[in-house]
Length: 143
Image (cartoon, rainbow, N blue to C red; front, side, top):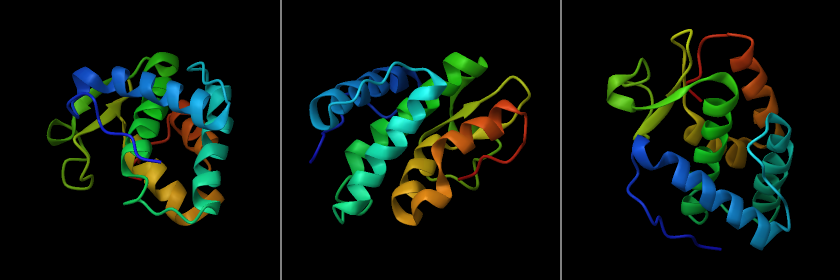
């Protein structure tokens, strides 16, 4: 399953990438993603199914990118976060991705990197736990 990025990988387009994740979930997984924190369980399951198929980060790169944008957009909408270019964030020396989410408390969260880790490392990287850690104001989202 390949998904070509239809928009530049920038904070300005993160919500558009997240909308693509909604479409992929509906078309490929018959799952509804509604930008609620509860929908992260479904997103996590979709990534687990990619893992079970034996896909790696390279084979699923575009899908993982939009899934990471979806995770980030849930944080933006639910936790009043914002997308920022990684070089202008506390994660500038830690994340290779072009954008991260900054929350009102100043913490930065690498949501794209997190979904790649979820695929690579399995359910130890449970996405709802990542969201709840951010919601509780715990710093350190360089995943």
